[in-house]
Length: 405
Image (cartoon, rainbow, N blue to C red; front, side, top):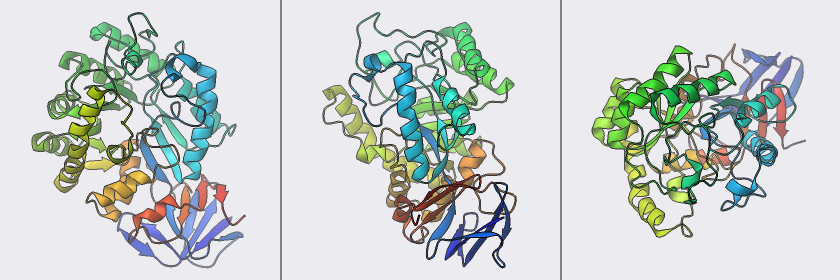
């Protein structure tokens, strides 16, 4: 038995602070709240405890120390990327994010699902990292936003990816690509539905897959019990994605009121990624990409506020490394700055995210839940910026950070 003591903890469902915090943990599970401490005691003083935060869109295999972004596609072999991901995973966990979705490899790997391998290594205790939900290779058409040859406008024949690596056109290729990811351990499917900012794909809102192709992706995933997350910006593309059965929209910067209402009516999720609209440096990007960013980023602010007010199920995602790994909490700060109440943002980073990954034992400090618990130096319901200053991290009852030590 282990007991955590602190000034209080956040009940994320009620949006209230409970004082004091006396949380009893045994075998990685929360077994009691309140009463006298039992067993070993960790006294966290004036800190406030939270459920471990969740980031529903990261790519731990891009960004991080030692990467040269303009050359990484042709310089970084799969072992290098995997080794770099270990550092990114550790930084993410120490930042208080105890669960993440890795949303789609879109790099040359020879068909290996690097994110599945990292997930297995974390589960086995070989490396420190968050609970990890891998998507395998993102599914995208030739020339789609997640076709890596688009980011640097490579000449024909340079760095071409296979169907198994996610480049799939037409229903038959799509079914093969999705089945390959599932066979080798993907726990959800990521698909590119529309264009994006940082690739030479034309308009960011343009729909890349046909409805028939989207339905094939959804059919393959749903029959195997997996959800589908879709990189989607444009309002029309969002509407088509929802109509075709996509479970979760990533970004959605250009959504209109009709697209937002479709998310509500069909009980679908939206993952935020709004911080990048403030923090991504596009000053060295080609003018075409700078122009897209100038159009899209201001609309990201109005669309997320409208989605919240309409009642969309919003889950936090940072799109790291669009913002640096380990700075994931900046996404929470931006959402509050842009009009979401702190309590709603904390729910988006805990219980709503847990719902998105079909988890019934994560996202709350409550009896029977896994002991994923973090500490911050103040009340995040009053000042969300304290989530940037995590000083204690427990995942599954094991302490991974304790700054007092």
